[in-house]
Image (cartoon, rainbow, N blue to C red):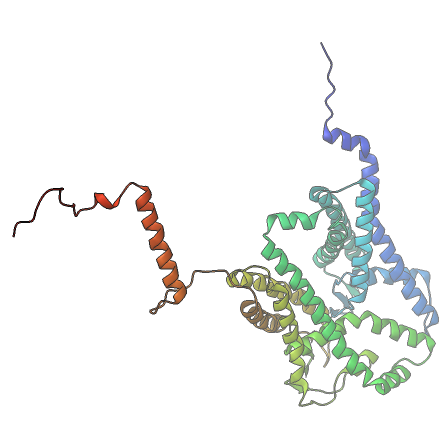
Length: 439
């Protein structure tokens, strides 16, 4: 009897990548961003503490302060002395996302993962490890002066790590192809157009913020000289401004969208301005001191983005109603993205006249849906192709119609002759030969 050795695909995977090696790679991918992020936060705190004047540097103090700093980099609200700080800088969060994405991609390449199911192993390991460590950090460091919600310390790092890991393995493990297979082409095109719209809106916000900052360079230099004298304080202030740079870009997008943003009782929008004294952060020098009559013109920026989205989607399908579905998907992507971004860019700022900082996330999402959806729908509906249809017959026939009817009659006559109907087989019979007509 022959002994046939049939290879099991799962056994081949286990032979190709042993379980112990797989565990090591996944553990490294889960803990690598954790250790690197904590070390980076500790290094920045050590540098600022070392060069700042009148600051007492201690290794234990820096390492202890790095734990809340790591949580803040994952957007976990921190309570200091009974006051909550939730308006946290977004640049460290963006760096954590990039670091986690690169680590997850490296792990997938080392293990040879190419399927969405295998991608779930990497994403799950990274997200669960980061969330568990955040929970441990919160429970270990919560004391008399620092207060952290353990639940928030778990799901914020898990969410950030999960998003970063998913972005890292998205193309490697075929998540995009799996999404395209489950969704139709119209929805996929709408998702792509929505992502482009989000990038363009952020670029518009960055342009408005840059314009405001360039027109206030004197105020920026003055704030650096008064609020942060010396090299150490200036370095700390510069790092703080860089950390809040993405927040400022989102605030600029909220401004051009219409609803604007607030600092406590201070309101900044194209149609409403309630200015006053702001914190001495050089980044806030871009805030206007008085309202200008041309500010509503800035709303043409998101309107123009909507026109571009409509031009991008006008050839999605021949049916205008189908193109409207793609426009709706794109508008939904914009609404969801800015609901998350605007909500993350603001938060509590202790107590005082500048608490809280809000980007009006709900109003911004609704406004951007209108700015993007309405012009995009109009452009996609009226400038796209139309499905072919039969012409509606008129009351007066055209020459072409008469020629068509004559040709049809000739065809019917030819068919009758081919069926055997001759001229002598009609209803009127000829008289027999020899017969005469009697009068």
